[in-house]
Length: 83
Image (cartoon, rainbow, N blue to C red; front, side, top):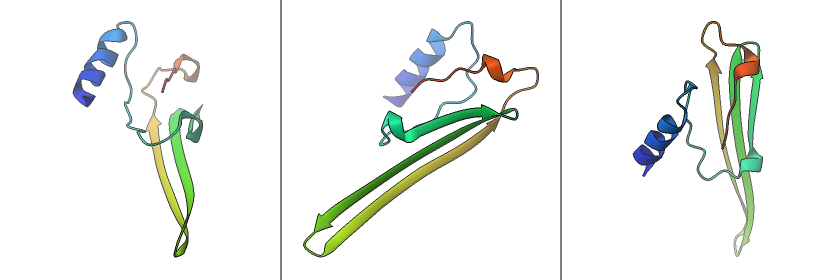
């Protein structure tokens, strides 16, 4: 469950502080981009699908964008992330 995963993640980062936890379920790791710049962490996830059906082509597009300001006194070099 999501709650158990969150607890495991929180327990595994004793020396680090968790800034954010985002649900990117349904996105392939290659579709997720994380950048740290200008005191902000930016997360962009984009997924595109194309299907051919009896009625023609169908397209599915999903995206997620989040921007989080780093807390004061946190250097951009200190930021780590994992999927």
